[in-house]
Image (cartoon, rainbow, N blue to C red; front, top):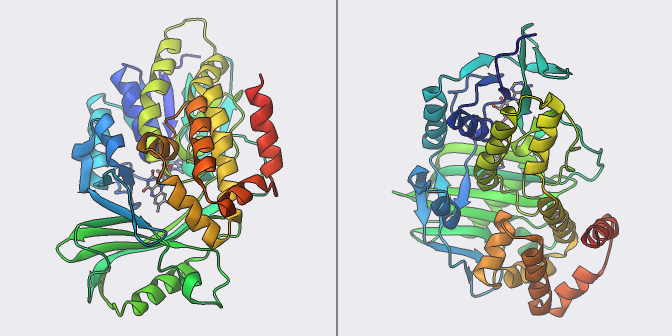
Length: 416
Ligand SMILES: Cc1cc2nc3c(=O)[nH]c(=O)nc-3n(C[C@H](O)[C@H](O)[C@H](O)COP(=O)(O)OP(=O)(O)OC[C@H]3O[C@@H](n4cnc5c(N)ncnc54)[C@H](O)[C@@H]3O)c2cc1C
């Protein structure tokens, strides 16, 4: 069978666009399949650290950038010593679309329902009844991916958040301010009857009297519902005697933080949330997608040139590029970190974050953006342990739930 397309990418989110555009840049023939029109505007609000976009030379795609960035864990507030930015999501989408369009990439609108694998190609069948084939299929359909196999886990933790862009009777934060985590006014510190896990406010001043406020639950296996988050946000505003004047946009956010890593021997390759690329301890993904897309595209492009490379070998090389031994080991440490964060009491959590952000900038930023080697990450964790108050050290040393199993895996792998 003649298979003219090198790669078929399923999805039309940031991951699908990033990998498609990097493949197109390398002269790979790519087709796209998405259940919606790829030009349909994205809903999510995507934030990123300034040093990440600067390094990627993409700071022109930000709509806002703040130098005044802090968090509230204790008094005084923690200053982050780094800029934070918000992507202009329309600009980000059109940046990728223009790269893709200039390579004349063909898009098909349809929903993928099943895959079939053969020696030199794979085929996708759609709900609409048409079929597409390519030497390699990349699934970038987000966290609800249906074709990527991974171990089953009963302990999936979800980040949930309820956010709103609007006008308020008084400024909820200082002018020009970005607040990553405002736990200080957290309900549970004030309301003894609040049995919900601690949540925090993520706050941005958009200028001209407009603010983005998002009540966020970092992660919980029994996800905090939108009703609770909305109520908590309202309670915090009431406490400050702030009323909502106008709401321009609402964001309902829920995604899994700790999807197990996919099996790396399958013929379909994942990218983005589908490939468990969400940072298990923070939820950040976009920076990782932007940094990984060129590496993955280069590996695929190089291997496509080899005439004797079967589709399963192509996929295997791609998975190994995406999930190296270093990144697998780091991922386990982040998962271990998430387990700890979910079990900490609120005072422990606040002490933990206070210590974490007092680490040298390369350590905390490298942790959050997953850009450290395993040796550097271990060094950062040891430093954190040494600096942390006793309550946090005690929490770090108590092994509960999945923590023992995760730590054993980390130790056994580090001995290999
Ligand atoms: C509200 C919200 C806010 C977030 N904010 C941030 C942030 O600030 N910073 C950050 O780094 N991360 C953030 N994340 C996490 C992560 O970056 C996003 O989830 C991101 O959208 C993941 O990109 P993706 O391309 O992998 O998946 P998605 O964006 O979910 O895209 C999946 C695509 O696949 C298509 N699709 C799905 N199933 C099929 C099918 N069967 N056939 C064909 N097409 C299909 C969908 O239509 C969609 O186009 C946020 C997540 C949410 C939900």
